[in-house]
Image: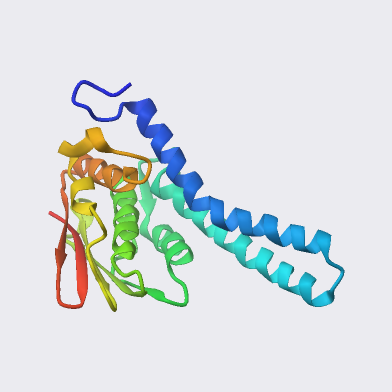
Length: 212
């Protein structure tokens, strides 16, 4: 049941985030299953090599996504209140960098409050959606030290604001949140917890996702 403001309660939010994570993992895990089925059904060497390659790539992708989700959505490092930005960079590169998209990481190597690191990773997810054909995600700090915010510039061909993302980042629209829209809503909640708001601006060849 939702709260009196129409926002998802704790149980609803947990369920929606779980659905989002499962959605992100279905494709690479399904590819592993498909690869195993090919190996079981064919004795051809070329089929087995294709299947092994598919399994290897999908296993790496699944591991990278799980490591990213563990920090971005989960209770990673729950024994403490801070996360190393070096660890955040590692999981971000593992999950988001590929043949189409690269990261330029201009943040200092330091410990930062857990919610700020989670906010950063969730902002990166939004920024990646702004460059569907790939490109570059340039991550810069806003301010310094424990009060640091973030500016992510998504540069690429056909850079555009992801559909309805501005509405989904508005906490006043919480009553309409679905499993598809929960990630930007969660980003807005993290921003609020850190004393920020997250906004998007369109430039000629880029979309900027930044705290304010």
